[in-house]
Image 1 (cartoon, helix red, strand yellow):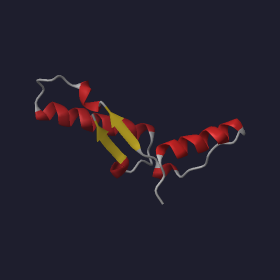
Image 2 (cartoon, helix red, strand yellow; image 1 turned 45 degrees about the vertical axis):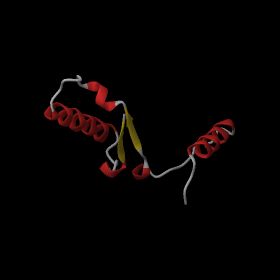
Image 3 (cartoon, rainbow, N blue to C red; image 1 turned 180 degrees about the vertical axis):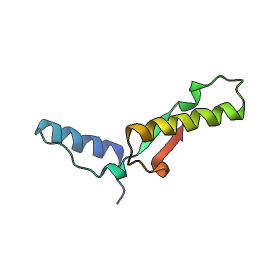
Image 4 (cartoon, rainbow, N blue to C red; image 1 turned 120 degrees about the horizontal axis):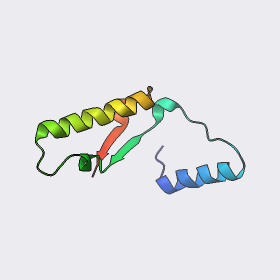
Length: 76
């Protein structure tokens, strides 16, 4: 089943109005890393980009241990 983001946000808002916590499986969480590549300089080499991405993944995994790496997406 495919959900549009506005529909999901509307459902969460309605749950909050009713003082209910939306339930979800922590393993199904998606992370969208917007502007992650702005963490290194323009003239950086590929190694610095790789180190930045690796550090970011490590930080996410530390804070959300059940994350599936396939659920972490790069966006710029």
